[in-house]
Length: 128
Image (cartoon, rainbow, N blue to C red; front, side):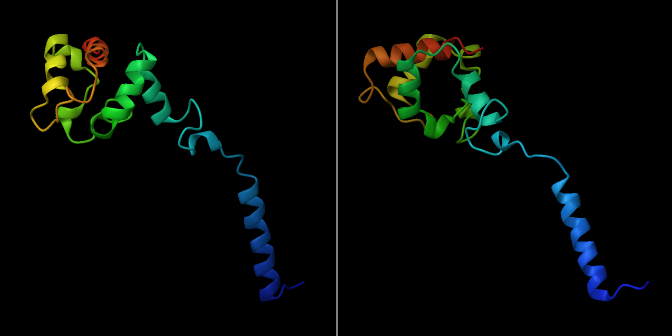
């Protein structure tokens, strides 16, 4: 028995649909911006903020995130990466940088409270 061209196409289309449907389920958490542990941005951010108080997290998100990134990775070039800031800068140097700025960074001495700068500098100095 011979099938018509239309019959062959219909059978091929049905096989294709069955094959696609049988490929398994898709893990939606990996595709969503803050979908869960499989999301590298969310897990990287959680790892970056380990040991940070709520105050430090809030200050960072309001004043630092735009240039230094969600995970301290640096968004404006390698010098803005803070993931290991304490490995090459002391707390005093970090405090001075945050307060006065320099090398392309604006100073935050007039915007942040001294205790906010101190808490942020202490936390970053621990990043080694």
